[in-house]
Image (cartoon, rainbow, N blue to C red; front, side, top):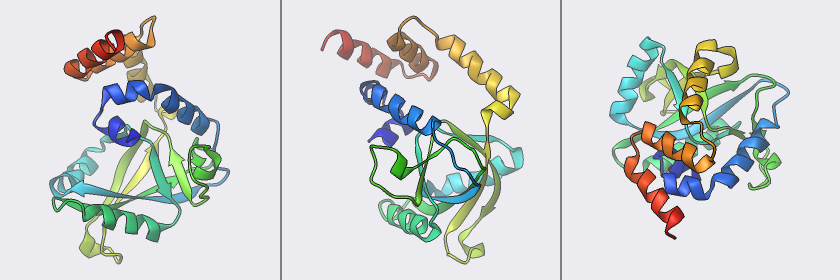
Length: 205
């Protein structure tokens, strides 16, 4: 429910879960991996979007993930997840996202976050993770018979232009109350109807 609300986004759900989201975010920020590791994310993607990822590759564009990412160090497990998800909708195809996490990057094993079942093979990446596509493989080129997208993580603190953009957006929505900041952000995202709904449910419960 949380990741769906972050992805769509569903502002009213996010507002109700804001303290929970903040807690998970800060837990992840307080964790890191001591050594670099390879992780895999089983996902689905619309076939047209997969084809357009080639254009994203050539343009060197950034991809930002608004949701928390639960990755696995077990590639076969990620493949099973992707194939299972793809059976839910014929318009989507399964893919595996390959990520190399550098040493000391802020992320957490699932077992270190108190809201999740103990599993040392799963790694949780924070919302707002950014990456660039470095390679795209179709099913026919892959021995696992599943499409693959290889990403390289981009750390905002190491990219001055990204940090400047983020700081500009933070300034635009800054307010004396978190609720007003959220409403400003929703207006910036053209989510006026959802913003009105939040105001109504907050002040007229």
